[in-house]
Image 1: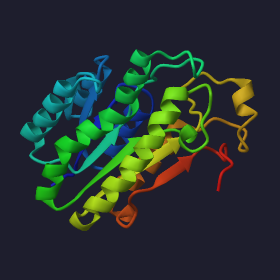
Image 2: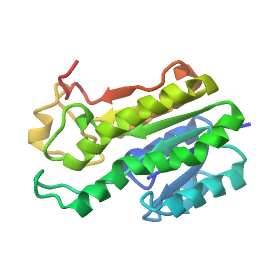
Image 3: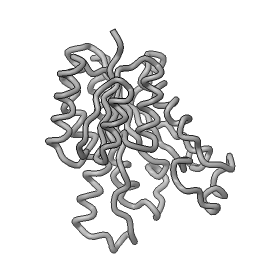
Image 4: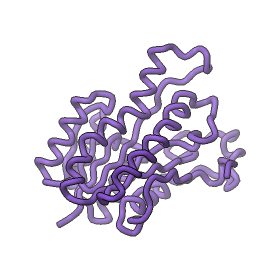
Length: 232
């Protein structure tokens, strides 16, 4: 029986490439995005495609239900998100802070609530959340992301500790700048490796963390940033 992976936010970028990578490694795929590209990709990979927003709890519920209806199990989940509100730190409105909370933290919490009972029944499961290099070194270019993904790091540790004995793992991947985004010289200059990451490098990291080879890794925040961040 092939393992089943759900990719939320899989229409483009890291999410789409991760879906392709996992398919190549033998997973059945369920792919969701708000654009319709995730639906097309999931179907092209021979799996399930679904159009919905990770900001809408009902869409997440429907996606999880359709995945179970199609495959009967959920072994792996990849939580990706788009780019939330930006701006000067004291000029971001209350509404945009709340939107950032939904973009970067509540999307993970909501999907985790849905899949945890399924993984408990199976006795096994793995979740990888795509976070940011700015989690531990906040960057003024990404204020709401930095704030709420620091919260995601705490949630991940609490969750991982609670469910480790049931064989359920959760880890975060912290990318730097990726070649799926426009390259800026001033950003390249900050990276010790002198280049943006290639998106497949993130996908292979995600696939590893979901695999049995990473079976003793949980509650971690893994930087994949070319040395961009300086903290130990």
